[in-house]
Image (cartoon, rainbow, N blue to C red; front, side, top):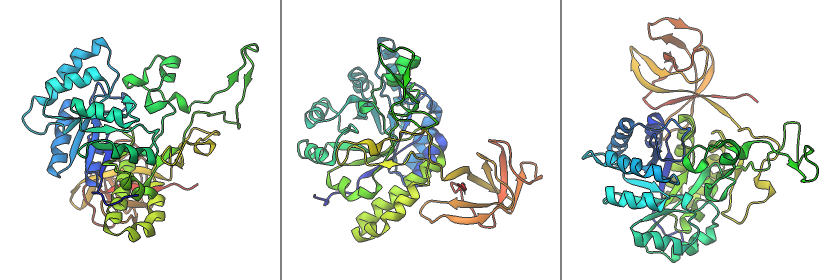
Length: 415
């Protein structure tokens, strides 16, 4: 497999302004975000137009790009609002989005009319599974298409060989897998009236299920069950950090991480680890091979449902599903991100409770995790606290070391 290719983009999700800044600082080349409307993560906090403006300016300051999702399956009543939305985002002279991520041809047409100079990337929601589809979108003006998760590396390599050289392939390499084809799920709508294709997915694939035989109503038969239930649709999470050479060799231009609803700790952990893995490979392939166990160990510290390689090496089988539970594995708890310093104490907004005297860890960009002990916690008025029991409380800490903005505090969970 040819690996004489340029370094791929690392594309990281952000559900709010905090995680966008973390993604940029921890190694993303580009960040994808959603506004308050028209993206497929309605339950994420998402960005107001003002937050979007600030986030794009922040990313551009560091030479990074921001892509805005507008990938709903639009209905008639959505179209004028979508047109106004694009106009609003393009109204300012500077710090506009670098691209829009779109799946619906009608929305694509509106974007071309309202933002003719802005790149359009075709969302995975458009079911992009073959090179003819890529050529179709290229001829309409798209320069990047996000591949369906259902493609193998061999299919991606064949696709690469049959599209224009200046057309880009973006592919999900890490994060949650959807049970529905290219994420086009109907279960949520059927059970709850909340349409996954309009951004309101209830993650019904994570629920427990039984089957009922037509002539025996009311008799619920387990498919495969433990005391907690049956989770027949519950896929493991995708993780391709051990296969960077194969991804590069297949001609993928952008390695995409799923997770616009994840915490800053998750974003920092995954972005920082993939950044290191990609850079190590392009620096020295032997260094990458030596460090592969460390990469896997580190990304496992982010919440996950165990890992699978998805469709990259063939169709998944029973080993790629989790049948006995729907819970995440959680190795670390997010405590907060350092925001600034005052009189030698470091400010953060507390995310989870921790104590004076407790051993925790500090992670920062381009550095190994540091083990520290909490020396002191004070509130905004300077009063000492034994712990910080109130979520989102602004506190100041002394951890016995110099801290910097965007350092993240985490605690290892005892199993």
